[in-house]
Image (tube, rainbow, N blue to C red; front, side, top):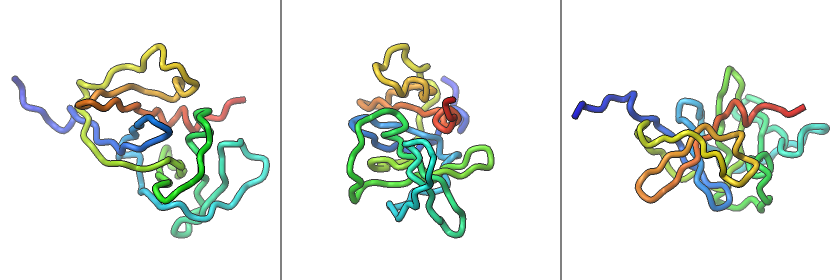
Amino acid sequence: MTSLVDQDFVKVIIFQLADKEYAIPVSNVQGIEKLMHITRVPKTEKYVKGVINLRGVVTPIIDLRERFGLPSSEYIDSTRIIICTLENMEVGFVVDSANDVVDIPTSSIENQPNVVGSIEVEFISGVAKIENRLLILLQLEKVLMVEN
């Protein structure tokens, strides 16, 4: 058996949306913030909640429930904004809760299933099975892509 090196793992942040657990690479995450005042921006997609001023940086906020076509939910104490950077763009994702940071062995990541039974399939890069958890890995580039 060969020894495992860092490249055999992907470090991810796990967060909750509805009754599913999702994961995004820590390398894309700048921070996790408690919910704060979001200033609405007119004529934006419904899932774009607006912008926040985070330490002097105006950051757009996307509600992932609405982006994935899930039923909306009241924001509560556990609601978080995960601040991500992708290609020099900073964006915040509203999630139900941010659970933990884990290392996923790359060998446990499978390609996206053909049938997940929901609209979010196009946003998925893969699925990881860890112990008795099923984690849905997001493809941030697709989440940020605007449909025409």
